[in-house]
Image (cartoon, rainbow, N blue to C red):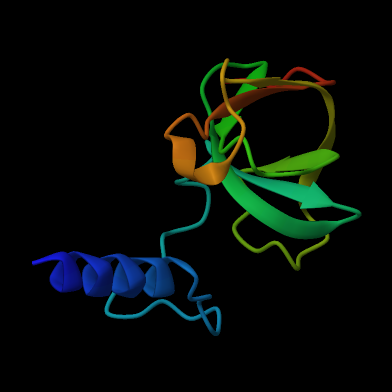
Amino acid sequence: MHGLHSFLLIYVLACLGQQALGSEIINGNKAPENTLLYMASLQVNGRHNCGGFLVSKDFVMTAAHCNGNSVVLGAHNLRSNQRAVRGIARKYRYPGYDSVGNGKDISFSSKQVLTKV
């Protein structure tokens, strides 16, 4: 039984370490423009790092391990020049967060400029 647990642990860890390839939607449909305005992209120097979502006019929820110095809200295409980029004023990590695997991988980021909700 110990061998099975070890195998399953290694399998799960290997699956978690996989990175998605490509940017295409698989077995789904593109969302119509201007329908997911609450979706956020946390970015480092203009490049997507992590996703998140708007929970109020001031705050974006994301994973605590995500880094970013700016946030883009509601962009249908991150490669487009028609996107609203806002700086991150402060990041609030969940108390006790110290690694991805401890179950406390959540944070709020406050934006520098308010957004109309």
